[in-house]
Amino acid sequence: MLRINDLKKTYPNGVQALKGITLELPGGMFGLLGPNGSGKTTLMKIIATLLDPDSGAITADEIDLLARKDKARQMLGYLPQEFGLYPTLTAEQTLHYFARLKGVWNRKERGNLVGALLERVNLVDVRKQRVGSFSGGMRQRVGIAQALIGSPELIIVDEPTAGLDPEERLRFHNLLAESSDEKTVVILSTHIVSDVSNLCSRMAVIRQGRIVASGTPRDAVDQLKEAVWEATLAREAVARLKSCCQVISTQFFDGLARVRVISRGMRPAEEFSAALPSLEDYYFDLMNHR
Figure 1 (cartoon, helix red, strand yellow):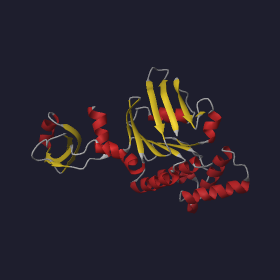
Figure 2 (tube, one colour):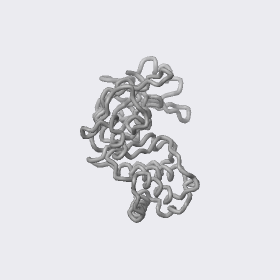
Figure 3 (cartoon, helix red, strand yellow):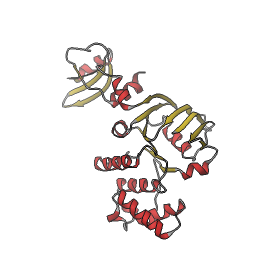
């Protein structure tokens, strides 16, 4: 269990990035969902010991991770939002380098570890290829491989699927799911709602430096039971609808608009039919209307 208690951070320019974050993260995949600029990356950097908070505490198994940064780094695997790789090194050389940084000095042991990691992230066939020639998805796989060195008890991945094509995104989802178990806390920080709905058993939503909701994705969706409605309307009808209804999403196509609205207790208009709520509906409702 990772416990975060009343974490606050204000930058020198006066921006208050975190305004008293309190969370309990059990083993398994935990999704931290929020828009860009909400404080996600600041929180991830503090947990990863790259940034000091102004106040608050982070503990794991009764260990103060802010006071014992050496211990925190021993138990940590980290894939930041932006990370650099030496473009002239091969995938194999890159992982050997990271393994040495994490204290795996024995050459044979390190070779076995690197081979197993390359197999796990499906890069064995390109292990002799320079990472500078890799696609974005392949680089992300190298990134998660280095984060798994040392069998970490805490894994942090910050915006890992931004910019990936659908196939690479699915492959990365599978990698994360395989890395998660009851003994390992995996924090997935993202603004992509489907990443959380597909992967995470628990979640929290952060907005303007505060946690505005937490729980399970299923509980979140259940809050909108029988409250989401959908209709296909003429474009000109959308503006009028927004003046009287809580519109959560609008998609335009072929001169028409597919509109989803929240209306608790009654059908918003005759054209609407009941729709199954999704985590995306819950998130947009939380961000735009509460």
